[in-house]
Length: 352
Image (cartoon, rainbow, N blue to C red; front, side, top):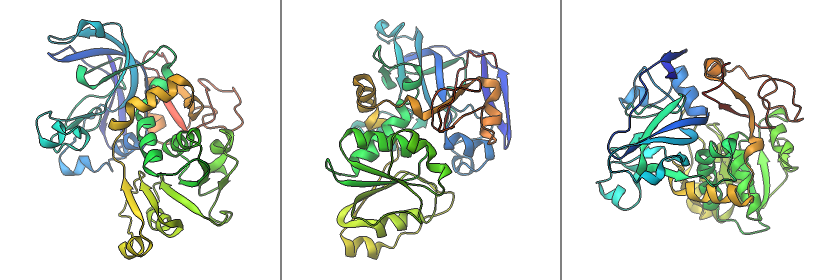
């Protein structure tokens, strides 16, 4: 089968690789759609920490945001999975440690991560093998675009819930990328008064295209109160700014990661009685994201700016935008144009 492989820093190729097989307890999925994200870019540039601490090494088969159809089941797998449209958890815990048995497999020290950690091949390929225990069924109303946004949506849902805002309260989401936009969508669906903070007006264009009129830069940000602040950015200074902005006694949520340490003065946290929450994984939020997409309370599809084939992945990871991707006007010029947002999706079956 064809698969995209990062063979070294800045070098990615579409290669013919052996097709996967369904080991006991596992299934093989025909991949319908997969997303690329900042983690994938870090692998491409060679900056991903797992490459430096031994949890990953080149060559790497990336792709952890995906959906598809089960084509084969291994021994011990319920045959009803055959033909099911599914997505799956990225985090594959050992299943034996205290964290896994407590339902916290996403922080298992011995976990594999699909397309990320410990050599588990990812979904930027025609087929993917995963444990049946990691699967989530997709209802008929959840199409390919939404299905491949379940994983980032699960992260976003967790961040929105962790903020602890009630209907009508003011929430500030810093970082209008994919996770920030999805977080804003989930929070808006729950009734929050959502504001977004970006670096430039251009960076906020997609937010405005999704109907978020309260989209600000640092120089235009109105005064609070901010009943919660969620950092979805990659800015090293944003976590400390979040603590400064949030109302005393409320919450800051950290889901974005910067390339360098993000210093936060714990005295500010203590003296403001602020609760800080970190979000690592979509795992506990996958079911909720699927339900929200299925009932229509959240439509994530406009976050996708373009759909391209495997042959264009290297260019995307190198920073080249497909035609019209992310154009906030919603124009349909350009191959693969779908929505107003920054997310690029991959169709492994596409010929270009």
